[in-house]
Image (cartoon, helix red, strand yellow):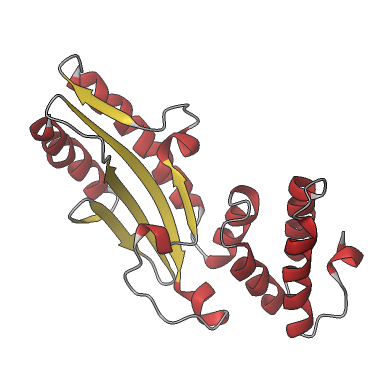
Length: 205
C-alpha cells in the first residue's frame, strides 16, 4: 500500500498544491508570503503495515512577526508542531475524518477526489489568512489553549484591546467551571502586568 500512497502524493497532491504555489520537501508542502508560512504535512501512522497505509494531514500556519514581536528566536523553517495554528484537514473541511486509510478495498480515484476537495477547503482558509492579524483572529476562534500565552502576549503588545477581551472571554467560557481556570487566569494576568496593562483579566471579562 505504500506504493499507492506515494502515487497519491506525487500524482494528485503535488500537482494540486503546486498550482497554489506550494513546494514539496519530503511529506511537507509549504509556501510563504511576507510574514506567514503555510504548511501541509502528511504524517504516516506508526500502525502502518503491508496491508494498509494510514496517514493524517496536518494544516498549519506560522508567523515570523508573532515570534519577533514576542521575543522568540527566528524560525524560518518551522516544523508542523512549531506552527502557531494547527488543525487536521477534516476539522477545516467540516468532515469527521481524522485519518485516511489505503488498503486493498480503496477506490483510489474516489479517494483522491475526496482528498482534493478537502485540500481546496484548506487553501480557502489559507487565502483568508494573509496577515499576522488574520492569523491572530483565527487562533482566537479555533486554537483553544494551544499557544495561548504567546498569542495573548502578542495581542497585548499590539494594543489590540478588542481581541484581548475576545480571547479572555473565549477562554473564560471554556474554563470558568474548570478548577484549572485560576492557573490560566494567573498566566494571563502575569502577561498583562509584564506589559504594563492597566487592567486585570477579571476587569476585562
